[in-house]
Amino acid sequence: MIFQSFILSNLVYLCMKIMNSVVVVGLYYEFLSIFSIGPSYLFFLRVLRQKRYFTLNFILKHIQAVQLLLIQCQSIIFIFIL
Image (cartoon, rainbow, N blue to C red; front, side):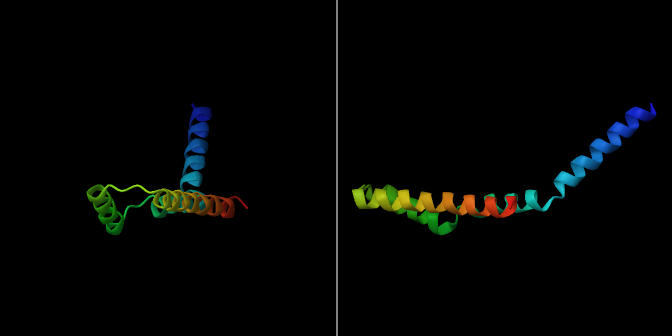
């Protein structure tokens, strides 16, 4: 009985330590900032739907924007790891 209580208390302590970790909080806010959709982006999607134009230049700009988001995500994760 005492041994089970000891294991449970260690498990609770470990979970609380992980939940209060700076890394977890940092990753949470990182994903909130990266994947948030602002009103300007919603207006952009509305205009895109109305005009329906896809040129090569337009597609390349969007690919670059996605690449920049991935680089931002990687850099924030590496800062927390190091």
